[in-house]
Length: 207
Image 1 (cartoon, rainbow, N blue to C red):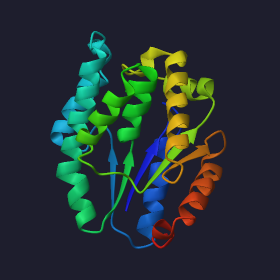
Image 2 (cartoon, one colour):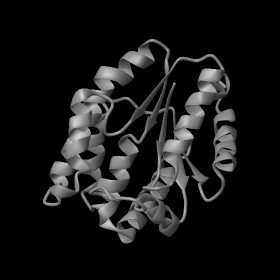
Image 3 (cartoon, rainbow, N blue to C red):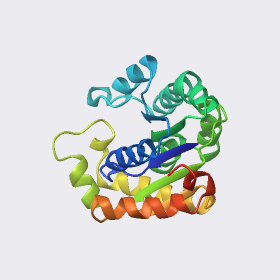
C-alpha cells in the first residue's frame, strides 16, 4: 500500500508520518518511510538544491523539473521495488505537492504541471493521500521558528495559495485525497487519520 502525507509547511506532516509508520510496524508490517524530495542519493542532492535559500534565482520551470527528476528517481529506485515486495510505503510529500506549489502557488499552467507529474511519478499513484489542513499563520510560525528554506521564505500569501491548491485537489479526487484538520494536539490529529484509514479496507487490514 502507498500512503502519502501533504500540507503546507509547518502543518505537522512529519510528526504524523512517524506515528503512522510506528503503528504499521507494531501491527507487524514491513514499512518504508520516505520524504520528498529525497530518499535516494540523486534525489537528496536535488533536495539540497531546490530548498537552498541561496538558489533564489531559480526559475519556476527549473524548480518543476528538478522536483519531477527527484521523484522519478525515488519511484524507480525505491517505491516501485518496495510495492512489488508488498511493503507499505509512507511518503512525506509526493506529486500532489507539485500541484499545490508549482501550479496553485507558482502559477504554472495546470495541464503542464499535471503532465509533468505523470512523468515524474512514473504512473505510480498513492492509494490514500492525507492532507493536514490548518491555519496558515499558525503553520507559518511553526515552519519559520528557527530557519527558512527557499520555499518557506516565500511568505504567508504563498502558503495560502498552496493551501488552496490542496483544497482543490480534495475536490478533484475525493476518494483518494482526504483533508484532515491539523489544528489540534498530535494525538487528536492522529486519531482522525486512523478514522480515515479505517474506512479503507486495504488500510484497515494493516492496522
